[in-house]
Amino acid sequence: MPSPKQFIASRISCVAVLTLLAIVGLPAIPGLSRLIIPTGLVSAAPNTSVYESLVIYRWNLADVSQPLISLPDHIEPGVDLSLSYPMNQFEFPLFQSVYYSQSARKYLLMVISRQGRRARVIDLNAGQRRPDGGGLSFSDDGDNKLLSTQDGTVSTFAPLGDGELHCSQINSRDGIVIKLHYNREDCLDQITGASGRKIDFSYTGDYVSAITQTWGPEARKKQTWAVAADRSFTSQPSFAHALVSKHIPSNATRASYTTEMEASDLTLAAIFGGPGAVAAANGFEPKQLGSQYPLYRGDLIGDDGVLRRGHLSFAMHLYGNAEGTGDLPLYVPAGFTWHTSTPTPTDAAVVFYYPRLGHLTDVSVAVFHIADFHLSDEGARVRIGNIGGPGGSIGTYKHSHIEFYRGNTGGLPSPAARARLRIDPAKVFEVSREALAMVNRSQSERPGY
Image (cartoon, rainbow, N blue to C red; front, side, top):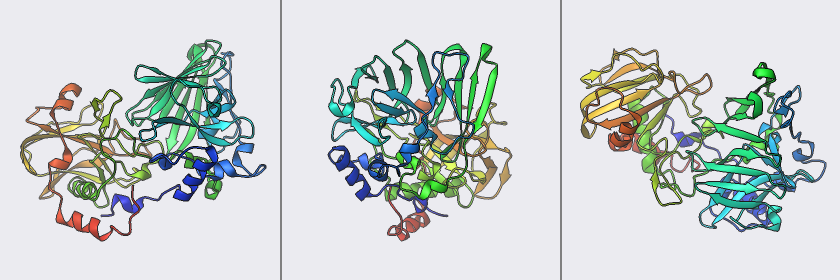
């Protein structure tokens, strides 16, 4: 079974990061290389930079008879840059989040200069106005942050499950409000405005593949724009999606994906999945899921010092491949003495009770998103269907979510009870010798997280 790390390829070189830091006048900040853009996006000569020909979509905030944004008939790749909002002399790409460097104690934001269309990283020291910030003011509002411009526009940034600050609302200087909504993967899902106008985003792999707008009287008008699938310029150093590089949040309780974690994930994948399955049970997702899926989804420490559980804290994801697109059988270990008879209607979840499972006794296992549910005894394991059932999967993203609980729950516990009863999947099963040997054999060949 291939290792999750065997698929990983770094998008940004260390040399490019250090060069960019010098260009934008920032010190070398640990961890920033996971976010910062390649130097090609900043230092490209005039007339050759992709930004100079970049189309910035125009907003129709006041005219409710028009869609929220004006889109061309044919949308080229690079939507994550074209969909931006004016911010003094900058354009702020709405797909970007505010990054906080714990070591440097700086809030940083990637923007595009409106004059010359060059990407740059600006320092948003809270409560201060700085020349490199273009007169922007960054302040606290409870758990949220407010970014205000000189003309009175205020953008609200809220922390999501990935631990980053994502733009959730923009109040224009004219009092017009647009709201940004995110899906369970913390990916920009919808933008809403006045009179029922909205923008919906569809994803395929790493990219926005379609944009649907609804507008007009009683929101009756609807149109979908397909994003061009031609990625011919991805080999150029100015490739737009290099902007969205995965990184581990500075407030993560686990700073790296270790050999032990990988061996644990390999073991769990072999127990619950078919050949080639990939498990994420130690807080880290495979990088191949794309820019919209965070790398780290484990425990976080809030600004108030309180531990906050992530989506993969005491839970695991199981994929058919590292890209999250594969179709594979789904299994549970033999030995359960009771199970719910049918999948739940919303999340296609089935609960199994084990008097003994792995190291533990008296354990319930809930498997969510089961496709084609059926039981087929295969000796040490029982096949229960396929990965990627309803509630958490779409055509281009298929996974199953598995949780372990103390005791016989008698069915799927309530969300509050689930949080209280969860057991860390990595603690249930001992790492297999085969998985550990596989990790050790490939140690020198794998790029790291």
